[in-house]
Length: 144
Image (cartoon, rainbow, N blue to C red):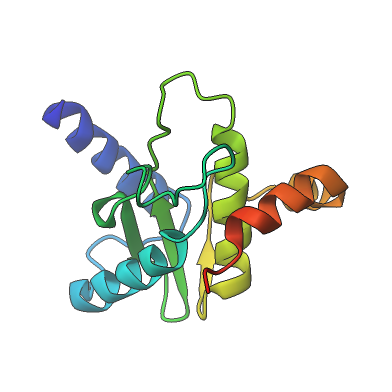
């Protein structure tokens, strides 16, 4: 598993480099990235599960270690969130991803890129559906 993780990490760094999002040998500032990752985690941990009254943090769908932030340039960051649905065949994983996207879009104070859930037309179309929008709003609502 560690070998697969290392290969995925290497592949991601090559994709970023080839796409021009990352320059080889560019100096990173890990402290800043860790702070930004914690900032992202603080935003997403309170999102409610679409089926249960619990938060994603309480259900261990997200954890601090599942959030990674990489600097693209001085003003933009790549946000990577690896969430684990409560069951492998979870039919609402896409809805959880949409909730994560909406929450970050509304709350992040810095520019970010999202590779997986970044189809603006799909997100806009999903949020036009009143039933789906209501579910997302309930999930991303801040606790009192």
